[in-house]
Length: 69
Image (cartoon, rainbow, N blue to C red; front, side):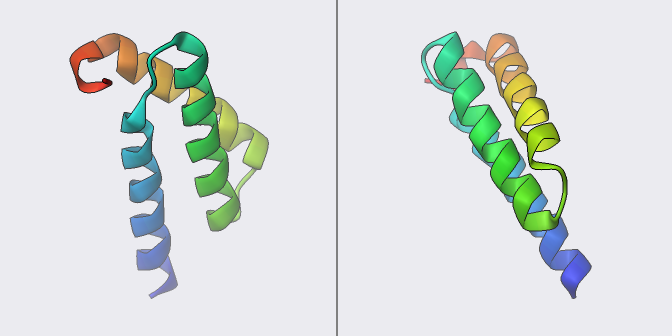
């Protein structure tokens, strides 16, 4: 049961990355927040989660700019 909860929570964190932002800074900040929050809840490294979240959100927004507004 715990594993299913963690999987759902991690998936929710990834969907939160799609919130994007209008500028590079907003994209990085929103991604870092989503990554850090998800990582904290599942017991991972918050710093690593923030870094991965920021990079993932910026990359997503650059690849799909129409979905980020």
